Length: 135
Length: 135
Length: 135
Length: 135
Image 1 (cartoon, rainbow over the protein chains, first blue to last red):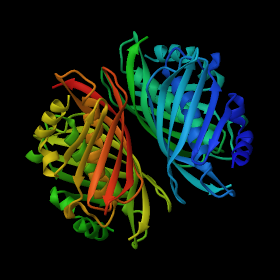
Image 2 (cartoon, each protein chain N blue to C red; image 1 turned 180 degrees about the vertical axis):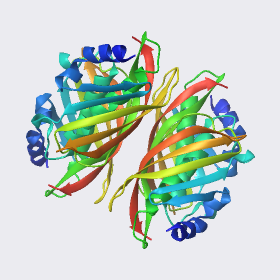
Image 3 (cartoon, chains in turn blue, orange, yellow, cyan; image 1 turned 90 degrees about the vertical axis):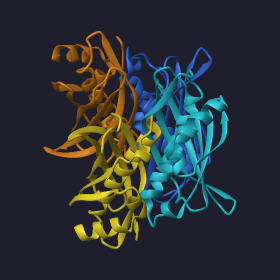
Image 4 (cartoon, helix red, strand yellow; image 1 turned 45 degrees about the vertical axis):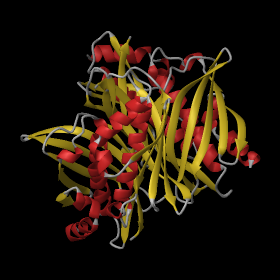
C-alpha cells in the first residue's frame, strides 16, 4: 500500500512544487509535511489558509486512497477547513484520517500542525468527502 | 475602495506567484482570475481543489475587505468548498460576495468558474467566515 | 413534479410535527416555511440553529428531489450552515436551490429567512451535498 | 462547572421536548443522549439529518460553554455535518469536544452515535464554530 501511495504522490507535480514529503502511510491514515517557504508567508491569512488547506486536503485524500481498489483514484467532493492558529514556523504537518470508508463516498478529516523551533501547534482541522473515480 | 483592495492585493506575494489578477471591485463584491498553469493541472483532484480553493477563498476575503475600516485586514476563520466540475481550461474566475457584514464575523460566499475556449463552467462554490483583525 | 414533492412532503412526519408548509416548487427550487413556535424559541442559539437547520436542509433536499428520477429519493450526505442573525419572528422561510445536479452527488444551497411583522431577515445560509438513493 | 451546564441545559425547552439527557460533563467535553422516537424515524434522511444535527450541535455548544466565563453563553456561528450512517436504533449519543478555545471564536467538533441493541455506530461528525455572547 505504501508503494502505491508513494507512486501516486510522486506523480503530483504540485506536491513537488511546494516540497511536500510523505511521512507516514497506514490503513486509513496518511501524514504529509511541507516547508513553510518565504513565498507563502503572508502578512495575513489568505495564503495561510491556502497552503494549510492544500496540505490538509492532500493528506485526507491520500488517506482515502489507502482504502480503495488499486485501479481507482479519489477526488475531493467537498471539504471544510477551520483555521485555529496562524501557520508560523518552519514546517507544516498534516495528518489525514478516514472516518468512514465507502464505495461512493469516503468521509475524511485532517489536522494540520505548524512546527516552530520544535513546538507543534494545531493550525487547522478539516472535514470532508472524497469520491472514488476510475484512475 | 478599489485602490485599497488593489494595494492589499499587490502585497500578497502568493497571489502574484500564481499570476492572479484583480478583475472587479465593488462594495461587498470582488472578482479575481488566474491562469490554470500546466504545473497546477493534475490528473486528479487534489491540486484542482487547492488551486480552486485558493482563488475562491481570496475572492471572498477581498470581498470582506471592502466592508471594513481601512486600518483592518481580514483572515479566514473557516470556509467550505464544494467542487462541482473539473477545473479544465485556460483560466479560473472567482466571484466573492459578502452575505452578511459584521464587526466580529463576516459571512461570505464565492463561486469559481473555469474558462475553456470562451465557455464558463462553474467548478466550485464556497461558503465561509472572515474575521476582521488589526492590519 | 409538484405532486410528487407534495406526496413526499406529506409522508414526512417530522415536517408535519413542526407545521412546515410547501410554498413553492419549481425545477431545482423549493420553498418551505414553518411557524416559529414558542417551544422552539430559545434564549440562545442551540435551538435556533437546529430549527433553522432543519428547514434549510429540508428545502435543499426537496430541491434536489425535483432533479432526479421518480423512483429515487435523496439523503443529506453533508451540509454546512452559517447563522447570520437570530431567528426572531413568526415564521421561517427556506429557499432551497440545486447548484449542480448529478446522478451521484447533487450540490445544493439554501437561504433561510425569518419573517417578523412582515419584515424578512436572512438568518442562515446552507451549502451541502444530497445523494440519490432508491426510494 | 457541571452544575452550570446542567442549569443551562434545564432551561433549554427544546432539549426537553425531545427528551435529551446530559450524560457527561468535563472541561471541553460534553456528552448528550436522546431517544430516537417514532416521530423522528423517517423513511429517508431529512429528519435523520435534523435530529442528528440538533444533538451534535448541542453537545458541541455545551462543550464550548465549559470553557468560557459564567456570565457568558454561546451561539453557533456555523457548523457542518457529515452523515456517515442511517440513525437506526433506540438512542442517539453525541460527544462534543472543544478543539480550540477562544474569547472570540471556539472551534468545536462532535461525533454522534446511534445505539441499536447495545451496538454503537457512528452516524455523523460535525465541525464548527461557537461564539461567546453575554448571557
